[in-house]
Length: 104
Image 1: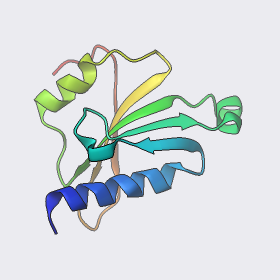
Image 2 (image 1 turned 135 degrees about the vertical axis):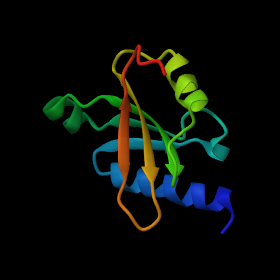
Image 3 (image 1 turned 180 degrees about the vertical axis):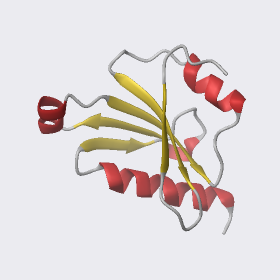
């Protein structure tokens, strides 16, 4: 399977996991810094005060230090949480939340 198809497939899996609680959009072509933007549904926002999510999705490997720095350098409103999700083959998700000011 080519890498673009694999990447698109796992991005759709992230979308499917979040869509019960979030309004989710997948970046077309995914050539930007974040692949998925998720905004909590009104009920989740009221009940859990969940943040909006900006997510980079990777298969089998963490983002490089340069990719992490790109994510950290993007200015988003304070109610957004920057994350990257890594999906190793035949294993569960590894989700990492990036903290503002967390340089490498």
